[in-house]
Length: 186
Image: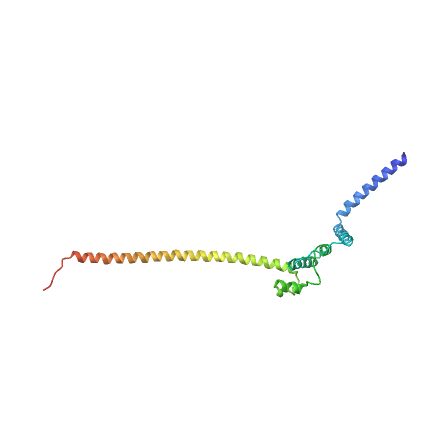
C-alpha cells in the first residue's frame, strides 16, 4: 500500500509541476509566439491532408487580400501572415504593389514605404476632414447669403415705401389742384 501512496503522491507532484510550468509559460513573452507557430503548423498539416479546391475570387477580393497581406508583412505579424496566406486566396504571381496601385488608380503611392492599406486609410481620414471643413464653409456661405437676402429684402421694402410715398405725394398734389378754383384768363 505504501507503493500506491508514493505513486499517487508522485502523480500529484507531476500535475502540480505541469500546472506551475503552464502558468509560468503563459506569462512568458514567447508563449504567444509559440502558440502562433503551433497554429500555423496545424494549418499546414490540415492543408496537406485535406484537399479543398481554391475558391474562385474576384479581382477586388484578390486586391483586398493583397492589401491585408502587405500590411501584415509591414507590421511584422509573421505568423498571422503565414496563416492568412493559407486561408485567403491571393495569387501572389498575379498581384504586386505596382499592379495594385494601377488597379486602384493610385500610381503615385507605388514607391511609398508604408503599406497601401495604411495610405488608403490615411487618405480616407484626410478626405473626411476636408469634407467636414467644406460643409462648415458651405454653412458659413449659406448664412452669409441668408444675411444678404435679408438685407436685399429690406432694401426692396424701403424702395417700395419710397415709391408709394412719392405716388401719394403726386396724388395729393393733384387733389390740391382740383380744390383750387379754376380761373380763366381773358
